[in-house]
Image (cartoon, rainbow, N blue to C red; front, side):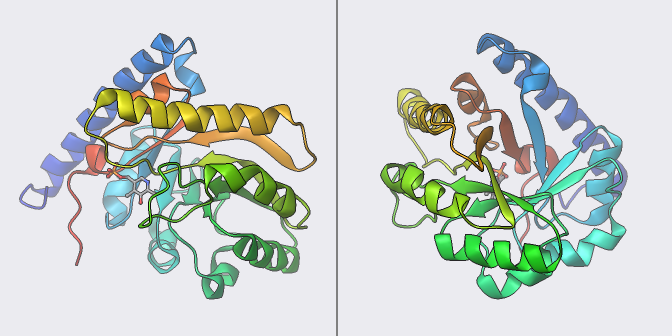
Length: 241
Ligand SMILES: *Cc1c(COP(=O)(O)O)cnc(C)c1O
């Protein structure tokens, strides 16, 4: 949308959000839930603060950023009084100290060691950081995350760490050709989420199932997602500089 004027882009964002909110409600109802049971996160990586603030003015109450540095640069310009921020990108251990206390949840916890570092830095900051465990649900070499098979065992190890609280699971699904393929991937994730929740372990709460992006949020909701992370369908195609 770089060829659009700011005014045109503001109105495109507003229309995109209206469309998404209707579409998400529809998918939620089809999956037997209430529209308000599914949260919409606006993924704001590479997006300038003025457009993010506009999305917040239009009703967005959750944003997601991938990079610690980028978020910390934009944070002072953002209107976060009624909006939470989550980190959704792979986190390196030397960045943990910088981000703890600045986001409500770190969704992209993909190793026990990063969870330990988050716990340590959270204790120093006298806080507890909510985390989601990232699951490499398609077993892809190119992706971060725990394998579905090991997720419960790792969750039990992480649950012992002081300063972190496990709040659910997140995944980035593989690109699938067929509708049935993506549905079955999301369905596997949902089953894992339900199974782990059913074990009722201390410090392991399965509240949030974060799955679905611009290309697949409908299928994710139909299979039980309660948080979709949508970037380009809100803000337009990303321009990386
Ligand atoms: C970029 C990103 C998204 C949003 O992707 P879109 O396809 O633009 O909706 C969601 N989740 C993660 C982890 C991302 O990095």
